[in-house]
Image: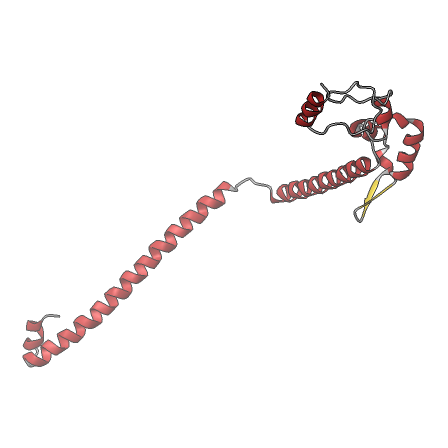
Amino acid sequence: MKLEELTALGIPEDAAKKVLALNEAEVSAEAKKLTDKDAELTMATDKIRELNETVKKFDGVDVGKLKDDLAEMIEKYNTDTAALKLDGALSLALAGCGARDMEIVKGLIDRSLVKLDNGKLVGVSEQLERLKTEKAFLFGDDKPDPAKTNPTGMTAQLGAQHTTPAGDPGNDTISEGVKEFYANI
């Protein structure tokens, strides 16, 4: 409505202006509601379009097969993890028993008899004892036997005749050896 239409109906101009102001406020409020609803509708339409595109990506995907594949991967992970734990425990046991070449000794152990029960190896000690008796050369420490590395018992000393038996400390430093040498001249 317009001011002229209201005054033509016999409404005083002041009252008509107030009615128009109230009408304008109501129209503005309704226009704002309409704009808000229009924005909500646009957002909902965009979201529906996005969801439809996401669903299209999964068209033809067999959810049952995905579940089976996941179960299969979990089983493989658990098997591989158990094998790694068993291998690690076996390596520790072999290091503890003095195996010289762990890979060779591991190859001689029947793994079908070996189990890991609450972090403890079961079925290894019997096999290791058998291997230690049958193939003793695979076990022992690799530190050289001092009696075999120096069978004469002689040690080299600075400024000496090299006839002193092993165990005689001799000179600890070169400077002590030099002093001893020049002292005997």
